[in-house]
Length: 184
Image 1 (tube, rainbow, N blue to C red):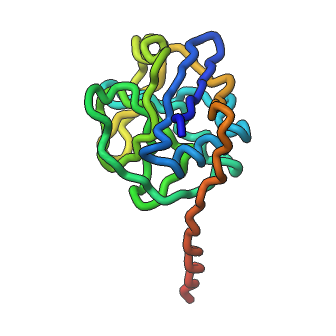
Image 2 (image 1 turned 180 degrees about the vertical axis):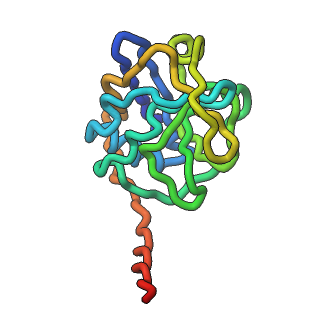
């Protein structure tokens, strides 16, 4: 199967093409493609930038109900070479939400799933997000939270599978949380 290509179109900004690594992370690619097809990624603002580490198209928007699917992690080493421009998922290495993705700036984290690589438009995305990024505050895990100096919003994200039908993703069933015990 030829690897699908994701297209990211930003309002007044760059257009990205990302080769999705179906051969390395097939279920992750299927989940991402399903969410893109449902329009879940449309209108996502770029809300988080960590210089030298990543650009995250949305730090809070992925929590929308239609984006709440969980899949098993498909961990594999990053491809050889430059890790800038990798498309990755953050989260629990055992179970991931494919709406919580980011573009690596070279600070690849081995606990994340790599499921694509930007093939065009990455330089323009970095130019729009990085210069003048504004530090807001430190957050968990000693990472800093920065926002782009100029607003940038994804207009539309879609996946071209070159006429091949991608099966639905295999979802992971999460155990129900135990009910809180009330103390008297």
